[in-house]
Length: 247
Length: 115
Image (cartoon, rainbow over all chains, first blue to last red; front, side, top):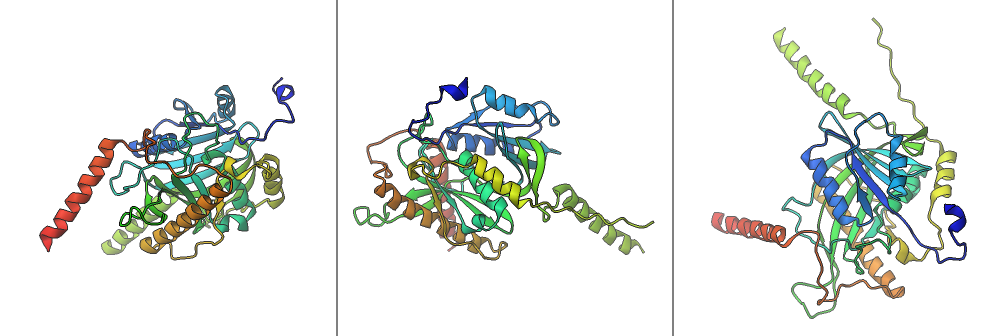
């Protein structure tokens, strides 16, 4: 019925709603990152933690129950590694990323501030357009991180920029406040400058699936090394050093 | 015992990626004000491990997008600047901002002391 009730000649709109939830076992830092994103993006609907890590196919249904057409799922592993699933529901695609170097807004180093729920400018650097997976990632992030104009609680002004930069085959996320006055000349000509608000994080794409939380893999990152492998390599190296010393 | 070399299978199905993007992408005829996306025409090529240079590159990207976005907003007669008399809840509370200010003051005092 939903399809037949949509009139064809209506004004085109960008309608997005995002369901955000996490798995069990997230740490305080991951929880704060989620809270920051929820505060920043008024079209996010937060839900309770998902009980099972093996039943991700429940997520599209859950998103549908909340009238969401996107899902952002944070999966914590071993209480230290954070993975993020960015998915379009119900038909896909979904991108699985490894999240590292998280700094939340609570940290006192970042002195910027912005309206709660103002729509931010989305900035993508040119590297996204150089590969097919980059273009797809850019499109999915535009849906999820771009606040649609009719989002409830959205404020009518623009005072921050969300930047996504592809560097070292990782996606770097930053959030800056836009200041239009020169603090030294408050009455002079408007001069745009920026102050970082936070949060900060780096995402390494791992895989892109055709469906929502499943389906065929259409991209896998050959450069991705699982964090557990990195840790065990470090430990092994230490062990080797010890062995040599003993001999 | 021979170690079996495990090679990672690289998958990059360009045709499928393109098809998926076409099927889900937003209507390109949407006005700019619906998405507020401002692409940055350069790619960032610097040493990732040089924190200062890297953050400066991100700052430059954001600054470019902010100025370009402001110009685009004017073109679309879309409200951009917040008027001085518009008050609403901010993302960081006053108490939080006070803590940030206090920290800055403390840092400055520390520098002065050591001079």
